[in-house]
Length: 305
Image (cartoon, rainbow, N blue to C red):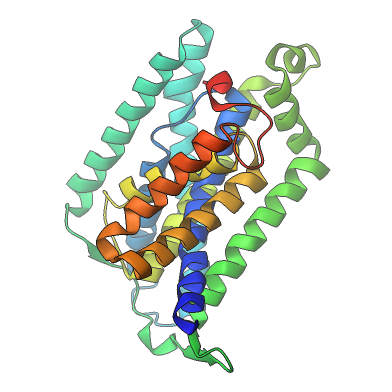
Protein backbone atom coordinates (compact mmCIF):
# COMPACT_ATOMS: atom_id res chain seq x y z
CA UNK A 1 0.00 0.00 0.00
CA UNK A 2 2.78 2.42 0.88
CA UNK A 3 4.45 1.85 -2.50
CA UNK A 4 1.22 2.77 -4.33
CA UNK A 5 0.83 5.91 -2.22
CA UNK A 6 4.44 6.80 -2.99
CA UNK A 7 3.79 6.46 -6.72
CA UNK A 8 0.65 8.58 -6.43
CA UNK A 9 2.70 11.30 -4.74
CA UNK A 10 5.42 11.06 -7.38
CA UNK A 11 2.76 11.10 -10.07
CA UNK A 12 1.19 14.26 -8.71
CA UNK A 13 4.59 15.94 -8.74
CA UNK A 14 5.25 14.86 -12.31
CA UNK A 15 1.68 15.63 -13.32
CA UNK A 16 2.16 19.24 -12.26
CA UNK A 17 4.58 19.61 -15.17
CA UNK A 18 2.10 18.18 -17.67
CA UNK A 19 -0.64 20.36 -16.20
CA UNK A 20 1.26 23.63 -16.57
CA UNK A 21 2.21 22.89 -20.18
CA UNK A 22 -1.35 21.72 -20.90
CA UNK A 23 -2.77 24.97 -19.53
CA UNK A 24 -0.78 26.84 -22.18
CA UNK A 25 -2.12 24.58 -24.92
CA UNK A 26 -5.68 25.08 -23.63
CA UNK A 27 -5.36 28.88 -23.42
CA UNK A 28 -4.15 29.26 -26.99
CA UNK A 29 -6.57 26.75 -28.48
CA UNK A 30 -9.45 28.19 -26.48
CA UNK A 31 -8.75 31.75 -27.59
CA UNK A 32 -7.70 31.22 -31.21
CA UNK A 33 -9.09 27.77 -32.10
CA UNK A 34 -5.63 26.82 -33.36
CA UNK A 35 -2.93 24.70 -31.74
CA UNK A 36 0.58 25.95 -31.04
CA UNK A 37 2.74 22.90 -31.75
CA UNK A 38 5.91 24.72 -30.69
CA UNK A 39 4.63 25.08 -27.14
CA UNK A 40 6.79 22.21 -25.84
CA UNK A 41 9.85 23.93 -27.28
CA UNK A 42 8.90 27.12 -25.43
CA UNK A 43 8.96 24.95 -22.31
CA UNK A 44 12.53 23.89 -23.13
CA UNK A 45 13.52 27.45 -24.07
CA UNK A 46 12.39 28.72 -20.67
CA UNK A 47 14.55 26.14 -18.94
CA UNK A 48 17.61 26.82 -21.11
CA UNK A 49 17.32 30.60 -20.77
CA UNK A 50 17.07 30.21 -17.01
CA UNK A 51 20.19 28.02 -17.03
CA UNK A 52 22.01 30.82 -18.87
CA UNK A 53 20.80 33.69 -16.68
CA UNK A 54 21.41 31.86 -13.40
CA UNK A 55 25.00 31.26 -14.47
CA UNK A 56 25.30 34.90 -15.50
CA UNK A 57 23.57 36.61 -12.57
CA UNK A 58 24.14 34.41 -9.51
CA UNK A 59 26.71 31.74 -10.44
CA UNK A 60 27.82 31.08 -6.85
CA UNK A 61 24.41 30.97 -5.19
CA UNK A 62 23.45 27.68 -3.51
CA UNK A 63 20.22 28.82 -1.87
CA UNK A 64 17.37 26.85 -3.46
CA UNK A 65 14.73 29.50 -2.78
CA UNK A 66 16.75 32.38 -4.27
CA UNK A 67 17.70 30.24 -7.28
CA UNK A 68 14.10 29.20 -7.79
CA UNK A 69 12.71 32.72 -7.44
CA UNK A 70 15.20 34.22 -9.89
CA UNK A 71 14.86 31.19 -12.16
CA UNK A 72 11.07 31.39 -12.37
CA UNK A 73 11.28 35.10 -13.16
CA UNK A 74 13.87 34.54 -15.89
CA UNK A 75 11.98 31.58 -17.31
CA UNK A 76 8.67 33.45 -17.39
CA UNK A 77 10.08 36.58 -19.03
CA UNK A 78 12.19 34.78 -21.63
CA UNK A 79 9.38 32.38 -22.55
CA UNK A 80 6.87 35.22 -22.75
CA UNK A 81 9.18 36.97 -25.22
CA UNK A 82 9.45 33.79 -27.29
CA UNK A 83 5.66 33.36 -27.22
CA UNK A 84 5.19 36.95 -28.36
CA UNK A 85 7.47 36.26 -31.33
CA UNK A 86 5.65 33.05 -32.27
CA UNK A 87 2.30 34.83 -32.21
CA UNK A 88 3.67 37.53 -34.50
CA UNK A 89 5.19 35.05 -36.96
CA UNK A 90 2.90 32.03 -36.95
CA UNK A 91 -0.54 33.43 -36.10
CA UNK A 92 -1.05 37.14 -36.68
CA UNK A 93 0.24 37.34 -40.25
CA UNK A 94 -1.55 34.18 -41.30
CA UNK A 95 -4.80 35.27 -39.65
CA UNK A 96 -5.11 38.26 -41.95
CA UNK A 97 -4.75 36.19 -45.11
CA UNK A 98 -7.40 33.70 -44.02
CA UNK A 99 -5.03 30.78 -43.63
CA UNK A 100 -6.14 27.29 -42.68
CA UNK A 101 -5.33 25.51 -39.45
CA UNK A 102 -2.84 23.41 -41.40
CA UNK A 103 -0.82 26.51 -42.34
CA UNK A 104 -0.69 27.60 -38.70
CA UNK A 105 0.29 24.11 -37.59
CA UNK A 106 3.14 23.89 -40.09
CA UNK A 107 4.35 27.35 -39.13
CA UNK A 108 4.39 26.56 -35.40
CA UNK A 109 6.17 23.27 -36.05
CA UNK A 110 8.77 25.25 -37.98
CA UNK A 111 9.12 27.68 -35.06
CA UNK A 112 9.71 24.69 -32.80
CA UNK A 113 12.53 23.43 -35.02
CA UNK A 114 14.10 26.90 -34.98
CA UNK A 115 13.96 27.06 -31.17
CA UNK A 116 15.57 23.64 -30.82
CA UNK A 117 18.36 24.41 -33.26
CA UNK A 118 19.09 27.83 -31.77
CA UNK A 119 19.32 26.17 -28.37
CA UNK A 120 21.64 23.48 -29.75
CA UNK A 121 23.92 26.05 -31.39
CA UNK A 122 24.15 28.15 -28.22
CA UNK A 123 24.25 25.49 -25.50
CA UNK A 124 25.04 22.26 -27.35
CA UNK A 125 22.89 19.15 -27.64
CA UNK A 126 24.07 17.59 -24.38
CA UNK A 127 22.31 17.99 -21.05
CA UNK A 128 23.39 20.92 -18.89
CA UNK A 129 23.63 20.81 -15.12
CA UNK A 130 20.87 22.95 -13.65
CA UNK A 131 21.61 24.79 -10.41
CA UNK A 132 23.75 23.84 -7.44
CA UNK A 133 21.44 23.61 -4.46
CA UNK A 134 21.93 20.09 -3.13
CA UNK A 135 22.56 21.19 0.45
CA UNK A 136 19.07 22.67 0.57
CA UNK A 137 17.22 19.47 -0.39
CA UNK A 138 15.51 17.76 2.51
CA UNK A 139 13.63 14.46 2.54
CA UNK A 140 10.65 14.00 4.86
CA UNK A 141 8.93 10.77 5.82
CA UNK A 142 5.18 10.96 6.31
CA UNK A 143 4.41 9.04 9.50
CA UNK A 144 1.94 6.19 9.38
CA UNK A 145 2.15 5.54 5.64
CA UNK A 146 5.94 5.26 5.21
CA UNK A 147 6.22 7.45 2.11
CA UNK A 148 8.83 10.11 1.47
CA UNK A 149 8.60 13.58 -0.02
CA UNK A 150 11.25 16.23 -0.60
CA UNK A 151 10.91 19.90 0.19
CA UNK A 152 11.26 20.61 -3.54
CA UNK A 153 8.32 18.35 -4.40
CA UNK A 154 6.22 20.32 -1.94
CA UNK A 155 7.39 23.62 -3.42
CA UNK A 156 6.75 22.38 -6.96
CA UNK A 157 3.17 21.34 -6.24
CA UNK A 158 2.41 24.54 -4.31
CA UNK A 159 3.71 26.68 -7.19
CA UNK A 160 1.60 24.75 -9.70
CA UNK A 161 -1.56 25.13 -7.62
CA UNK A 162 -0.82 28.83 -7.02
CA UNK A 163 -0.38 29.44 -10.76
CA UNK A 164 -3.70 27.83 -11.67
CA UNK A 165 -5.51 29.84 -8.95
CA UNK A 166 -3.93 33.13 -10.04
CA UNK A 167 -4.70 32.38 -13.70
CA UNK A 168 -8.35 31.60 -12.97
CA UNK A 169 -8.70 34.81 -10.93
CA UNK A 170 -7.08 36.77 -13.76
CA UNK A 171 -9.41 35.29 -16.40
CA UNK A 172 -12.62 35.79 -14.40
CA UNK A 173 -11.94 38.89 -12.29
CA UNK A 174 -10.05 41.29 -14.57
CA UNK A 175 -11.11 43.18 -17.70
CA UNK A 176 -8.22 41.75 -19.68
CA UNK A 177 -9.16 38.24 -18.62
CA UNK A 178 -12.77 38.85 -19.65
CA UNK A 179 -11.51 40.09 -23.02
CA UNK A 180 -9.58 36.84 -23.51
CA UNK A 181 -12.71 34.85 -22.67
CA UNK A 182 -14.83 37.00 -24.99
CA UNK A 183 -12.39 36.41 -27.84
CA UNK A 184 -12.51 32.67 -27.18
CA UNK A 185 -16.33 32.66 -27.31
CA UNK A 186 -16.85 34.72 -30.46
CA UNK A 187 -13.97 36.25 -32.40
CA UNK A 188 -15.98 38.65 -34.65
CA UNK A 189 -18.29 39.74 -31.81
CA UNK A 190 -15.31 40.53 -29.59
CA UNK A 191 -13.88 42.72 -32.34
CA UNK A 192 -17.21 44.56 -32.74
CA UNK A 193 -17.19 45.23 -28.98
CA UNK A 194 -13.95 47.16 -29.41
CA UNK A 195 -11.55 44.53 -28.09
CA UNK A 196 -8.08 44.85 -29.60
CA UNK A 197 -7.69 41.29 -30.89
CA UNK A 198 -4.02 41.70 -31.77
CA UNK A 199 -3.13 42.84 -28.27
CA UNK A 200 -5.24 40.16 -26.58
CA UNK A 201 -3.87 37.46 -28.87
CA UNK A 202 -0.29 38.49 -28.07
CA UNK A 203 -1.08 38.64 -24.37
CA UNK A 204 -2.62 35.17 -24.46
CA UNK A 205 0.50 33.78 -26.07
CA UNK A 206 2.76 35.56 -23.61
CA UNK A 207 0.85 34.30 -20.55
CA UNK A 208 0.62 30.72 -21.79
CA UNK A 209 4.29 30.74 -22.79
CA UNK A 210 5.34 32.21 -19.44
CA UNK A 211 3.52 29.41 -17.60
CA UNK A 212 5.15 26.81 -19.85
CA UNK A 213 8.56 28.40 -19.29
CA UNK A 214 8.07 28.27 -15.53
CA UNK A 215 7.18 24.60 -15.89
CA UNK A 216 10.50 24.14 -17.71
CA UNK A 217 12.30 25.82 -14.81
CA UNK A 218 10.58 23.57 -12.27
CA UNK A 219 11.52 20.47 -14.27
CA UNK A 220 15.08 21.69 -14.64
CA UNK A 221 15.42 22.03 -10.89
CA UNK A 222 13.62 18.73 -10.26
CA UNK A 223 15.88 16.65 -12.53
CA UNK A 224 18.87 19.00 -12.12
CA UNK A 225 19.43 19.08 -15.86
CA UNK A 226 18.11 20.73 -19.02
CA UNK A 227 18.60 20.54 -22.78
CA UNK A 228 17.13 22.09 -25.97
CA UNK A 229 15.30 18.81 -26.66
CA UNK A 230 13.77 18.28 -23.22
CA UNK A 231 10.28 19.39 -24.26
CA UNK A 232 9.35 16.57 -26.65
CA UNK A 233 8.00 13.97 -24.22
CA UNK A 234 6.41 16.37 -21.67
CA UNK A 235 4.82 18.28 -24.54
CA UNK A 236 3.29 15.12 -26.02
CA UNK A 237 1.89 14.10 -22.64
CA UNK A 238 0.61 17.61 -21.99
CA UNK A 239 -1.33 17.43 -25.25
CA UNK A 240 -2.78 14.10 -24.09
CA UNK A 241 -3.69 15.84 -20.82
CA UNK A 242 -5.73 18.60 -22.50
CA UNK A 243 -7.56 16.07 -24.65
CA UNK A 244 -8.35 14.10 -21.49
CA UNK A 245 -9.47 17.21 -19.60
CA UNK A 246 -11.17 19.07 -22.45
CA UNK A 247 -9.42 21.12 -25.12
CA UNK A 248 -10.64 24.50 -23.89
CA UNK A 249 -10.94 23.80 -20.16
CA UNK A 250 -8.08 25.15 -18.04
CA UNK A 251 -9.20 23.29 -14.87
CA UNK A 252 -9.64 20.22 -17.10
CA UNK A 253 -6.09 20.60 -18.45
CA UNK A 254 -4.77 20.81 -14.91
CA UNK A 255 -6.73 17.76 -13.76
CA UNK A 256 -5.80 15.82 -16.91
CA UNK A 257 -2.10 16.42 -16.29
CA UNK A 258 -2.32 15.24 -12.70
CA UNK A 259 -4.28 12.12 -13.67
CA UNK A 260 -1.81 11.29 -16.42
CA UNK A 261 1.13 11.64 -14.04
CA UNK A 262 -0.50 9.39 -11.43
CA UNK A 263 -1.54 6.70 -13.92
CA UNK A 264 1.85 6.47 -15.58
CA UNK A 265 3.68 6.20 -12.25
CA UNK A 266 1.35 3.51 -10.93
CA UNK A 267 1.50 1.71 -14.28
CA UNK A 268 5.29 1.82 -14.24
CA UNK A 269 5.34 0.32 -10.76
CA UNK A 270 2.86 -2.48 -11.54
CA UNK A 271 3.97 -3.38 -15.08
CA UNK A 272 7.59 -2.23 -15.19
CA UNK A 273 9.25 1.02 -16.25
CA UNK A 274 9.21 0.10 -19.94
CA UNK A 275 5.40 0.20 -19.84
CA UNK A 276 5.28 3.56 -18.08
CA UNK A 277 4.59 5.70 -21.16
CA UNK A 278 2.38 3.03 -22.69
CA UNK A 279 0.05 3.09 -19.70
CA UNK A 280 -0.26 6.88 -19.94
CA UNK A 281 -1.17 6.76 -23.63
CA UNK A 282 -3.57 3.85 -23.08
CA UNK A 283 -5.49 5.95 -20.53
CA UNK A 284 -5.46 8.82 -23.02
CA UNK A 285 -6.97 6.70 -25.82
CA UNK A 286 -9.49 5.18 -23.40
CA UNK A 287 -10.78 8.63 -22.43
CA UNK A 288 -10.80 9.64 -26.10
CA UNK A 289 -13.02 6.67 -26.95
CA UNK A 290 -15.37 6.85 -23.97
CA UNK A 291 -15.66 10.64 -23.70
CA UNK A 292 -14.27 12.40 -26.82
CA UNK A 293 -15.02 15.88 -25.47
CA UNK A 294 -12.76 15.25 -22.47
CA UNK A 295 -13.61 14.84 -18.81
CA UNK A 296 -14.39 18.55 -18.32
CA UNK A 297 -15.13 19.60 -21.91
CA UNK A 298 -18.49 20.33 -23.44
CA UNK A 299 -17.60 19.78 -27.08
CA UNK A 300 -16.22 16.77 -28.90
CA UNK A 301 -12.63 16.87 -30.08
CA UNK A 302 -13.48 16.48 -33.75
CA UNK A 303 -15.75 19.52 -33.60
CA UNK A 304 -12.87 21.71 -32.39
CA UNK A 305 -10.25 20.69 -34.96
